[in-house]
Length: 132
Image 1 (tube, rainbow, N blue to C red):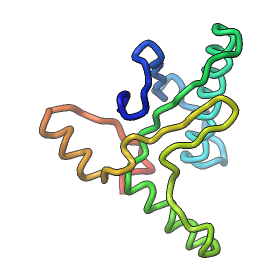
Image 2 (image 1 turned 90 degrees about the horizontal axis):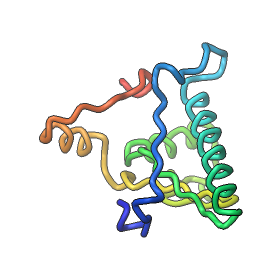
Image 3 (image 1 turned 135 degrees about the vertical axis):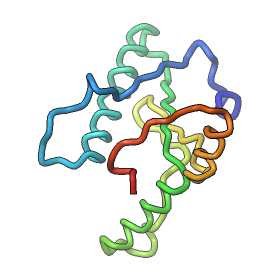
């Protein structure tokens, strides 16, 4: 994915939402809380890198959404009564305020990703809201 988006290796930073970073239980759903966490971490990284580079740094964040997530987004929009002109899945690339979000796995289904990982004996983590 790094080559596709022309990202230099020295510019890669990784953040994980682990047990220690799980937010307290609230009335907000897990998906919304995860979205808030991603936004917070992304903005913090943008600010840090821009300070280090005197404001000359663009930041790229790679997210793990896959094709099934994009289909789910369209279905949820349909259920909520979205107009036909607003029916689209998840953006492959989105830039806002010096932050570019990319989704390099968007062309792959969950099953394809799981098969790839299984073939290489690599485990993955899945939050409870995705275990359907």
